[in-house]
Image 1 (cartoon, helix red, strand yellow):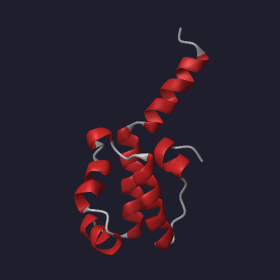
Image 2 (cartoon, rainbow, N blue to C red):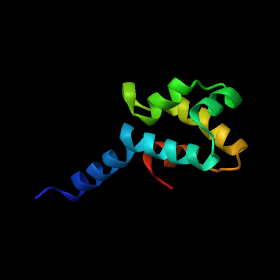
Image 3 (cartoon, one colour):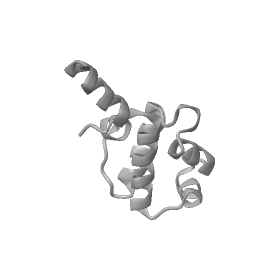
Length: 90
């Protein structure tokens, strides 16, 4: 039987993996009502970059990217922290 710490690590990994980060990013973007193209036009983060992050391509959303989109979400009236966006914590 796996140790408790192993189970906790597995849970953390499943919540912080690129796919889960992408899902959280997409859900926040959808809350704004902005398409990827509108996101690009208004906030100068390319639609292809947003799509890549949401689809977990090339490792998915990074901490630097998370900080950029959190600033956008704040402007849109949505408060979110880096820990939640990247790791599902908070």
